[in-house]
Length: 213
Image (cartoon, helix red, strand yellow):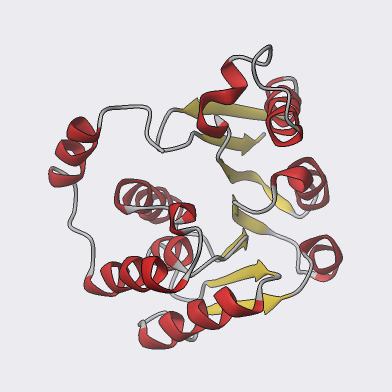
């Protein structure tokens, strides 16, 4: 899902850093082995995640929603030398595929994949999160946000994916399904949270940058 033409998207991707070989293989195998390959972050968003991570140089990244590992590999590129990325997912099949790619990467020892329900796992995780990438089941976005917030360092970043939900949030009169209403409620929650600075971008399916004050 893009909110710009495919031609313009391709142009932007062509004038950005090239996708690494392992990420191309993640994309290929995801299309071959999964039912919803559109859940991949994709080239341009992946480069964006890497760029933000490199700017922050986080020691501790938390990702909620691993899928096949593309976004985790992109985020790991910016980790500090002693940094770690913890990624949570409850799908054993895609988690196995993601772990196989982590094992092939130079970040193998920096990425820890924990399989299970994030709502149960988050309370036991360490504090002092520098960067959170939120890309899991939409119905629990607000709950994940609330659980993680106190664990996030002042100045820490949250990147929330899929906030435009294929553009459905623009016309609630035509889209009354539960997921659309949930995403709209999450967007309003963030917009009205004075504890953070926020910037919503129309990149891919929409991504909001949230900075804790």
